[in-house]
Image 1 (cartoon, one colour):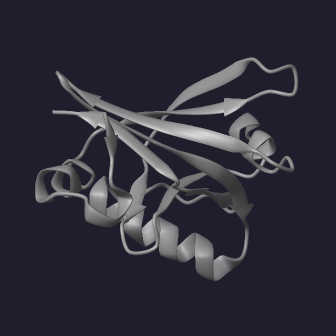
Image 2 (cartoon, rainbow, N blue to C red):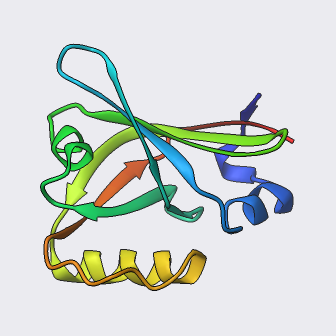
Length: 130
């Protein structure tokens, strides 16, 4: 079921802050999916989802391609949410520090990674159940 981005209910917002892993699906140049487990954060006011990763990772390289799109899918039993939209990479220290702080708030303090970047999904659609 498609959810209204402008009016997510409290249960959905809570689910997006609980400690759950997700999958990030990017699309390779040949059209095949690249799916990996990730942690992410979501900011409902800006409709941005953030994933921290190494700058040389496949997911970062795919996100840096012009016109890249991605989906984040979080599942817990019968509850699930998929957030999708255009994705891009941010490398500036302020954006990385902000994303690390958000990640630490939802999961744990990540290990130090001087090559860290932020993958930002501009969420245009959320599907979900439960």
